[in-house]
Structure formats: structure tokens, C-alpha cells
Image (cartoon, rainbow, N blue to C red; front, side):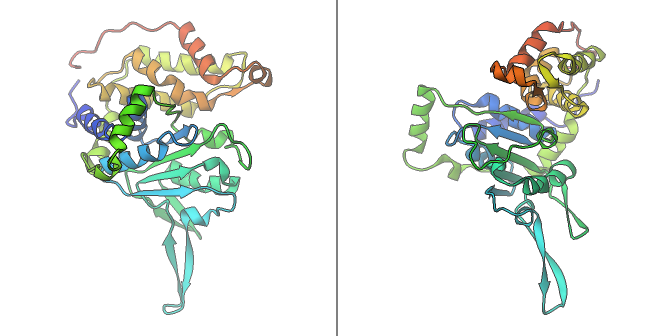
Length: 323
């Protein structure tokens, strides 16, 4: 196989090193965010307040020189507060479109489950199609486009849980989690005089990121690995504790994510371990547990771990011409 002309691993390393100047001890989550971005997917961060979810989004945007906007979701937030609205101009006697905050490159949707279902749905077209339709007119969004939505898993008062169809639109769901005592001490050192986010400068251009997105699709996936991916997904549909398994969109997401993980590691072919690394964050929010499973405090992540342990891992040799 011919090597791609884009140094995907180099692009990823520069972004990771830059973001780690702000986010301490969360390399795995940073890599997962970059994997989603390289696959043109979107991220759902489910975590408690104050663990640097906003800082992660800002650091990613500033590292790539992308525009960044933030929406704080509340129950009275309207769809037009996200997409924009047409306003009548008395001078020209015509309606003019005033774009909303969705017209950016990195959009942080804070506490998405506090917005009403109608407002949540306003993001669907933007996330899936990369465009917004207002008053029958479609407007394309700037690329690269990344939505990072957050929700608090603890506080459920005054919230509107995301429906399964909208959860499926997110490429990955994962948590940042609390830092270790050592990481928290390091964080205090960084914050002593000023916030490091103010000193973050672009290390990758938007054009380089777009090229990396395109090059990621060229990563080779062996037939055995493709079968391994479909075996995992089909097993979720047959598992007794699950009322609903992963959709075909989940299969495609797992395929793309494995390609991106391999590319970030500096390879142009996918290993089964690449699939295992991303299977839980890609699939855990696409599964619906049976009521009795929830009563037993079972989680989708724990079930996926059992599925991964049960399915035989294929053995393969790297194809000729790969690295």
C-alpha cells in the first residue's frame, strides 16, 4: 500500500502536546476527541461540573486555529437561538438572515439535556449534514465542524434526557473524570499566575485537519478486522441484557474510529487492538439496557467489556507495503 502524503500522526501529536498544556493527565480523552474530529464525528461528554470540559473544547479549537462558540442550554432556549433567525430589514424591505452560534467550527453545547427536545433537535441537521435550514433556505457550515456537548449525569432536575435517535448522532460518549492528587497539584502550578488557555496558539491549520480527515479514510482495514467489527455489533443485538443493540451507524463509527486510532499511532493499517480501544466510547451510548438490567445496576460499558472478552480476536499479518 502507498503511504498517505499527510502525516496524520504528526498532526495529532502536535494537537495533543498543545492541549496537554491546559488539560493535565487526560491524554486518553484528548486522543478520543481527536479521533472523533478526524472522523468528522461529534462528542458527548458526560461528567460532573468543573472537570475541564469547556477547557478541552477551547484548547482543541485554539490548537487548530478554529472559531469557537459556546451555548449554555436552558429550558427557555429556542431553536432559533442556535441556528439563527431571519430579520426584516426596513431599509431594503427584505428579510436578512442573522446566523446563530452554530455557525462556527468548534461548538460547545453546555448541559445539552437542559434544553427542550425541540431545541435539541435543532442541532441534528447541523451535526449530521453540516448545514442549517432556516425558512426553507439551507446554509452550509464552515469545515472542520465539531460539536462537543456536555451533560451532568448526577443532576436530573429540570432536564430533558436525549432520545436514543439523537444519542446515536454522537460519534463518541466518554467522561473526563476527576484528576489524581498529583495531577491536581500540577494543575495548581499551571494556574498559579494565569490560566494556560490564554497562551495556547495554533499548532495545526484547519486545512491540515481537513487533509487528515480525508487521509484517515485511506487507512487499510483487513477483511478479518471488518468481520471482527461486525461480530461485536451483532453480538450487542443478541445480548440478553440489552433491549436494543448498536445500529449500522454504530458499525460505521467503529470502523472509522479504528482507522483514526491506527493513523494516530503512525500506521496505515488497522489492528484488532485499535477496535478494542474505541469500542466502548463509540458504542456505549448506542445500547439500551432492559429494565431488569438497570435494576441490577448493570452498565452498557460493563456489557461491552464482556462482549469484547467473549469474541475471538483475529490474528493477522500486516499487508505488504504497510508501516
